[in-house]
Image (tube, rainbow, N blue to C red; front, side, top):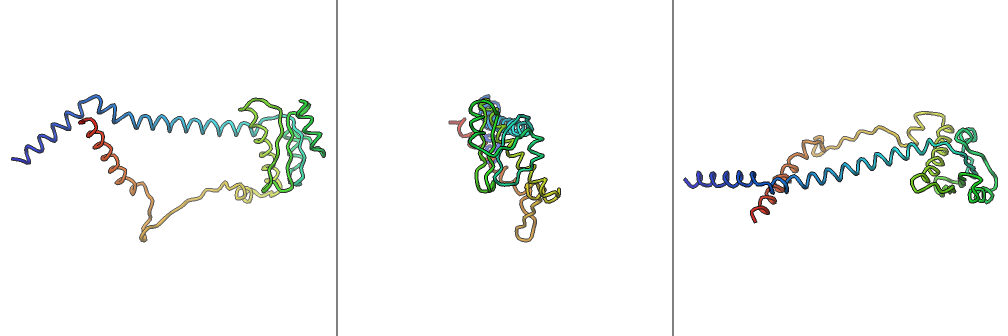
Length: 198
């Protein structure tokens, strides 16, 4: 008889709680807010990546000085570049508005900073200078390697698959994550039920 009453009380309380509007508002509000934040983050990242990609392909005239010897002259010309020997004069041209930008490639671009000087075109458009400078050096390196496989390896654009094992069995699958996620969901619902009761 006591078990029957307990089941009745539990089912009554669960149904009564599920009928309350504030239960559903509290339950659904957190996932909705998290979804909105994740959505905004994804849109922002996609927009930024698109902006960077489009800036790499922007066409404008620039001056450059190559102390490294890695920059391919023909690629630089194709991108709108003019080689100079005097960096100070090139910077003066940029300051006076006679040149759009000046790229100074150091002796070792892997360890030293590539210096970029440009005409101010606003916070969002100024990124094109560094994007084109990086693109120029990357295309020059790819041209020097002259092998598509080695170019992919050097750019770290590789398709890598990872399999992990635990106690002799493959681990890390989605099925392993489901029980903890279900426990977390039940825990979350219990906390919400307790808050609504109080």
